[in-house]
Every structure is written in C-alpha cells, then in structure tokens.
Length: 218
Length: 218
DNA sequence: CATGCAATGATTGTCAACAATCCACCTCTT
DNA sequence: AAGAGGTGGATTGTTGACAATCATTGCATG
Image 1: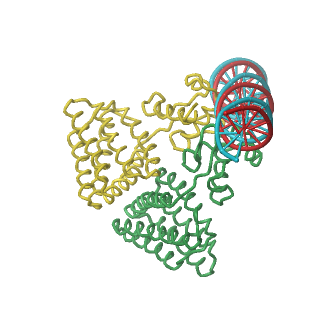
Image 2 (image 1 turned 60 degrees about the vertical axis):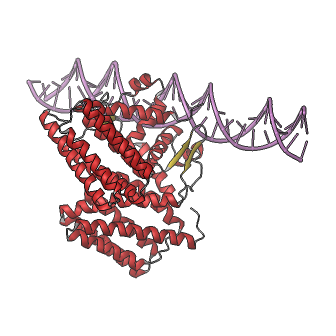
Image 3 (image 1 turned 135 degrees about the vertical axis):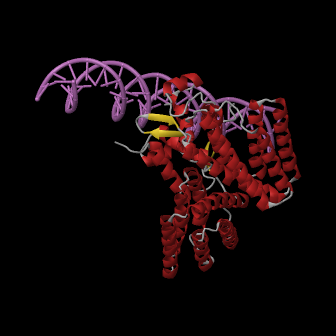
C-alpha cells in the first residue's frame, strides 16, 4: 500500500513547516498537537521528529521536549560554509565529468531565474534560485552530498522566508549563477570552485545585509 | 536524571555495531532482538533507528524492515568525495583562522600515528588515523561539517573493519597527514585543499587495492 | 512437475494507557 | 516580603497489546 514510510512523510511535512516558519525558531513541538494535526499517533510522529533531530533542525532537551533550532549569525555563516563545501564539490564533479545533460538542466534552471527576474516575481525567483542549487547537487550524482544539502537548504530557506522573498540585488544574483555554469561548461575546476565560493560569500553578505535592514533577529 | 535522550544513546550503539560489523551490511535489524539486547522497548529503539535512516546508514523497506546499507565501489568513492569536501572545507577554515591550539592538537594526533607506526600496532594506527580526522573537523568549529563527518566516518570504518586493520603503506599514510598539517600551519589554503584531496584519493586507492587483494566484496 | 492458492507464523506498524518528569501556582514559614 | 516546599496539571517517556503486512509452507490443481 504505502510506498513510503510514515515517518518519512511526516518528517517532510515537519521540514516544510520549519522552512515556512509555520513552526517558528525556538518554538516547542507539542506532540499531542502535531499528532492530531497530521492524523497520526504520537509514536510515528516521534520517529519522524528524531529524524529532524539527527539533521540538526530540532534540538532535544530530554524530559522537556523538542524545539526548532534558532539560527544566530554564526549559524548562518556555518550554513554557508557547509553549502560552499557541498555545492563546490558537486559543481567540480560535474565540471570534471562533462555531462551534457547536466549542463542543459543547469542552463534551464538559469533561464527560469532570468524569466522570474524579468517578470518581477521575487517568490518565483527565490524558488528558481533554490531549484538551481538542487539541480546542481542532484546532477553531481552524489547521494551523500545530496543528503547533506537537503538539510542545509531547509536552514537557508528558514532564513529567507523571514525576509519574505525580497531580494536585494537580483541582477547580480542571476549573473552569478550563469557564471558558475559557464565555469562548469568550460571544465575549469578551479574557476568553478572559486565562483561557487564567491557566490556563497555574496549570498551570505546579501542575507546578513537584508536582515540588518529588517531590524532582523532570526 | 538522564542528560541524554534514550534514542541518542541507542543510536550511538547501533552506529558502533555497524562500524564493527556486528551488524553486517545487508542484514535486517530485528526489532524484538535488538530491543531485548539494549534493554529497551521497541518504541525508543525505532526512534533511534529512524536517526540512522536519516543518516543513510540504514535503508528502509516499508512493511519489511530496516537493513544495514551495503557499500559497493561507487558508494565508497562517494564517501571519499564527500569526505574530501567536508574535510577540505574544515582544513581550509583552520588554515585561514590560524588558531595555535588547533595546530597543537593536530600535531599531537600526528605524533600518535607515528608512535603507533613505530610500535607496529595497526589497530592503534587506525584509531589514531580516525582521531586525526576527527580533530581536524572538530577544530574547524563547524557544527554542520562535524555532523556530516560523523556519518561519513562510520561508513569509512565499516569498510576498514572488513580489512581487519591491515594497512598497505603506513609510512605514506602518516606522511600525508603531516603534510596536511604543514600546509595548514603555513596558512596556505590552496595547498591545504590540494593535500587533503590527494590524501583522500590515496586513501581511496589504498582501500580499493586492499579490497581487491582480500578478494573483497563489501 | 510446475503453478496458483490458502493457511500460518513472524515481523513491522500503530495505538492508547501508564509512569515519570517538569512547570507554574499556591501556601506556609521565617 | 522572600524563599522553601508542596501540589496539581500538563507534557514527555515507555511499554505492552493489537492490527496490518509479508514470507513461507503445504496442498490442491492443471
């Protein structure tokens, strides 16, 4: 009947809720409330929650409960350090392998960003942005990088949702992605790595900057 | 009373069992047997198992059970690709930060390897080897890299346990570690990254080579 | 002899009840 | 009034029982 375990689908729903800030940072996860909401009993819910604890999206305080993590500036920097490591590795893998299909997908992802930019749709631009990075890691073919990346993306979206999809410098953003694909297409590993790292630095800078403007604490 | 959740400690015991091949690759995890062995009921055990599923150490077949992953050669390569990404990022962070305490710890870890080598104790050498890489990632201060690394190390040990700690070229092994620390100490980011990557390539080569000699399937 | 099928045993999936712990509030004492 | 201590309510932690599913075995049938 079910092709996927209950814990797996509940875990995904929890991740989505954290991303969208339905479950706010620092908030306690009430077992009774959530199990009722998801239509399951506390058993499967607790199993799903343990998955997110392993991911580091929830923090456990024994005999007290589970809480959504709160990201301070040091955490956000750490997320981007880890993303640079994971996506840098993924991009260099693709650059080395020279798979045409991967380049086509990446180009398509870039075009989607350009389109959203031209339409002036910041939400779509954000989605296209994340889609690009997802494609990048998926195309590397590394199951382990993909798994790590999944968690990092949730943490990133968690921050960006707080800013309600207002991009600071969308033109630069799109151009950075294009240049990454250019480097990959050229098969230039060093340049690829450099541009991924620069992109992460810039994204981090824009994020911190935007948060300061929003009087933003996370 | 308990400072750590039950799921957390059971999960660690499961990881150890997988590392040491007490739970062999491909083997099904019997809930009744394991819950009896650990002295807990099936509930907390299942929570712990879901943590390992999230890590990718267990694979879930709904309504059938959980199985220890089997690593083919492609998987092993993937582990080392991911390790290169994580440890490369960690090493460059330390190289940039120039923290004397980190260098001291890394040097100490190297000396422990040298000592084990001189004593001709392959098990101790292996432990010292893993300790070095643990120190490396811990010293980076990145919680996320550390979390990812933990899982990758379990998978690596899983392979090395199969070879019963027989090292092929221990001299080269120790020297590679020393050179990584040299590069970090010099603050040379590019050289650091290069040497970490080379070390991973060599470690992978030695591992595959050793497995071939052992008529080894994983 | 091979194949389909049903019964059976074992295992996973789910749940609700019980125990243990924590938190907030109140009271009593100094 | 401040603090210690106790009490009630709510939440987490754990367990055993029950339901659902799967693998196996044996049997009947073409």
